[in-house]
Image (cartoon, rainbow, N blue to C red; front, top):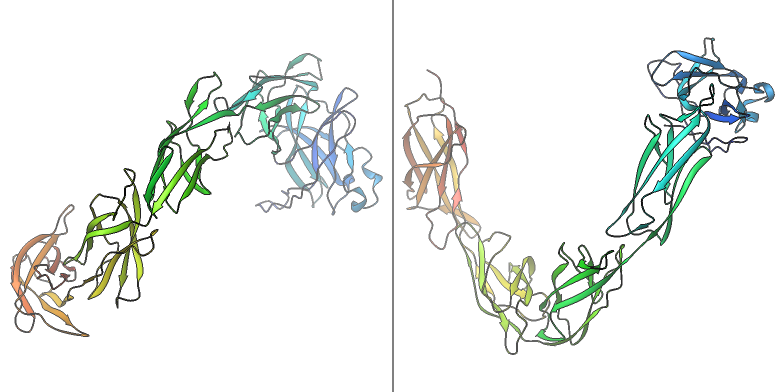
Length: 533
């Protein structure tokens, strides 16, 4: 409902809202700033109007009542004392009553406001407010619980709304009326009761509420309030690894594992999922659904390392766990090899270990892959996690280039680096690749040709005596590349090969039979469409 008027028996408190003219196909359809709603006075139902128009007077306003969803006007009323304001400004924020409304049946109706009715300048604001045509409404409600917790986060309020029929004074369900409810400081929610006047409203809590909060449900002057308390379940932290004290290489990541449990509402101990941990002053892992956690902490130096539980909305407590840490600068790389293949993929293999001493099983280190064009100025192009004592095989996230320098570096242990590797191959490139002639028919022969070049310093020269493979992929769905044949480059780097064309498709030439000093290369994808005979 876009406009709300609070209803009382003798006075009505209203809050202002700015509503503007709504553009539409009919110029007379507007959205007024003024409010309307129903109010009970002297045992009768009236329309109560609050004026916020600066371009009209209350005396210009007529009230029309319609059944919801219908167009027939059931009642038309004027405003009492509407001529008491000499100017529109004098009338702002003033309230005006109509005469008692007489309708055939108890229920909820809609209110239209009409300005200057019957004139050429008539304006109509349809569905400006609701008329609750029922006397002495009464809300009766109960809540299914008064305490919320991690196990029970929803409070459901069930109730009924009844009122007296203004015509017969019979008490009956106030079907279709709108119950309002509020949880915390949020705006009221609007909930329509069913045909029997019943309502069932769930209120979900997050656990961040204060220990005492309140749910309210009401209709006009009748309502109910339910105080709700938040029960916070005690937590228990258990660390399985490491226990007590630990020795680890400086800069290594020591494995941390354990479990967090909670004391449930029924007094049993259950897993606590989604609980965050703090390791020192850093955020650690969160627990899984079964309450377990697995993470690491960096061995930055000798001393204590505290594992604690983060502040969680539904829980409390959980004593921290202290670990005594002893470190030594013993990390080292061993047997590190690096290579670049013909497709420019750079790989490293080797082992991260220690020169002396020990470390907990599962200890890891963060390793940077560094690249340099001159062997002096380095930049990190990627990183990976290496387990101490376990051989690694890692691919760099960037492609290799011509002659350049590569190394591995321990990110948290200053000075721990692998030896430098100089990697690179000679670039090759297929140029002037084509298939000819164009516009041929099925069964006709065409020639795939081009030139294979190799880079020499800053220039390119012919690359003779090398194999070039010719591939074809048909245009049919699901087709794959198939090798049709090979050609060998001449002294000037050129190559050619004839084929009989069987269907439409795409051609491509590739130099992949390289020696260890050269990179592979691919030619263009060249589509060929056959001419229909």
